[in-house]
Length: 306
Image (cartoon, rainbow, N blue to C red; front, side, top):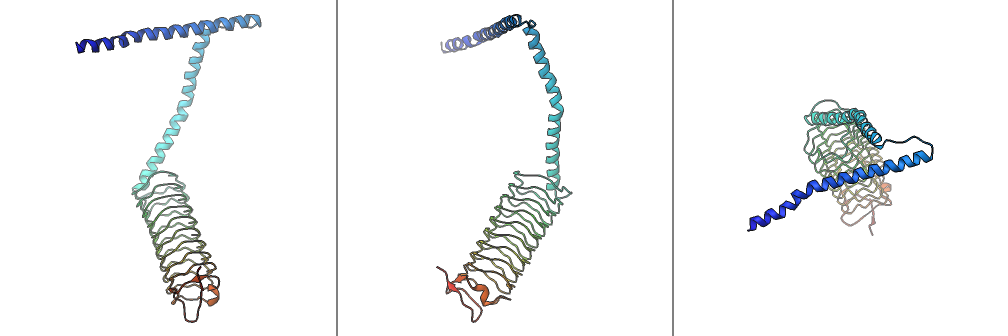
């Protein structure tokens, strides 16, 4: 009995479907006839020609298909360019080749291998680069603005004038990298490794450099304004004429660092160790503040931080 009921429930749908189609066709035909009547009446009263709506309808369909034929080559070309870009990205990921000006914006290229690639002026803005390898890559003038990912590897990469503004790359490895005049403002470089990197005139203002390793880095004229570098290690770094204005430098190590001409106005140096810094004068610390745990060269003093 249940099977009969199920069949009865299904029958109206199967039988009603052709009826619905016929009704829709009749409605369409009626609308065409009505439009034809109105168009011809208007045409007669205005002295215009009579209109064959069926012909006009057919002509419109033909024009539509002709337009599709014209658009198809452009669409095919666009798809081809996408395929070409994906192919180029795949070749870069294999660790070889030259692709200056390449664009990979907003892509997820985490764990990819770009070791040794030559991709100057390329755009990697907004990319995901978790553990992505850029070891020894040529990336001068490249843009990584807004890029995000933990521990990407830029060891010994060339990144002169590169843009890392607002990049979120904690634990990144820039050891031995060339970052001359790089823009690295307002980014997260906490725990990053800049050992022996060239940071000449680079700007890390407003960035997080907490616990970063900047040992033996070459950074004359570097900008660290408003930077949070708590616990960072600048041992042996060349920081001549660098600006640490209003920076947070708690527990920072400056042993054997060259601080000649460096500016510390407004800097907070609680717990920082400057005892073995080179080129530092008492005047440079005027306007900075510290606490009882700050270690200073003999005879130097600091205002207590509020």
